[in-house]
Length: 414
Image 1 (cartoon, one colour):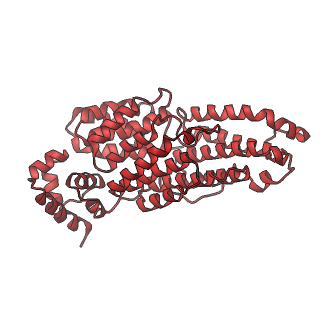
Image 2 (image 1 turned 135 degrees about the horizontal axis):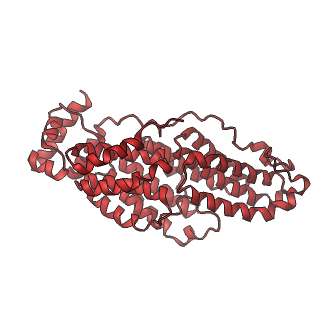
Image 3 (image 1 turned 90 degrees about the horizontal axis):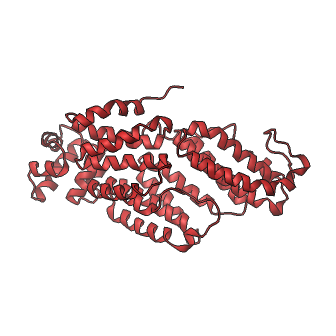
């Protein structure tokens, strides 16, 4: 029996067991009664969004979600084969002692490399902070060449530095490589994102930090999360929560596990992981590192923001909107990429709650800045928002928003 034919009767059975008429059910979910009737009769298929809402409202513990065939991953977030980038750091050249070059960048320090490395590192650390800030308001494809070059340059400093003082340069290069991987994912190149993340882990390991490799699992779990692979996301995130790892990495991994549970409809597992994330990220040890912050540096309470994100995926849009409203107000004004990421999720939660005009107001402000900072990952929520709003075509606010939505979602042309 097809998924559509199984889902409808099961939905009707659960609704009737809850003592709800179809009219009451449609009002509670903000869905058209006629559409829900066709879904129950197997004449229309249910979207994953509808399955989540029904699951949460009827307390089905993910049963209805499991009956819905997930759509194919979005084309601009689906993983592509990892092809070598011409900018990727040559590991052997970087890690071999005494190479004395800056990886063919034309910055020739010759025999002075050893003495020059130490005073240059603070300048590169400042540049890293500036580039990370610039990433909030710049298109990833514009920023990537500069990030890749700086990664090679700092790794080159390490190559020409005595082994006793090489570690700080390798560690900083690893952070450049990790951020480069994130920008590659934002540009829609998951293959390059994973390659740069692996590069970052190896550089960090060579610099004496064995932990960034575990954070690489969290980054890989982000790719599987946006591909809709709940089981893969949870499995990768759990591997990064071993005892002995730094609390911040374990906390970020627990957040990612929660997101995996949420898209699987496992509310208990999601909330349990969020509690663990909150405890780890609030610990003193999670704030004690002098190195660049791993993960987001613009969200004041990552666990709270992730809670709002997960509540929507669990089919609880009203609760999600309340949390996201509060947390989005705390985001710094300059963090445009972060504001867009969580702002569209906030708009989506309001739309799913039936607050269509408010959802359009939020989205309209964000859509105005999206052409300047395109994001493959944010676009996944923009598409979901477009589908959600398509149920309210008679709304003038929705009609007015459609041209801006179409411009952001139109395929890019080089």
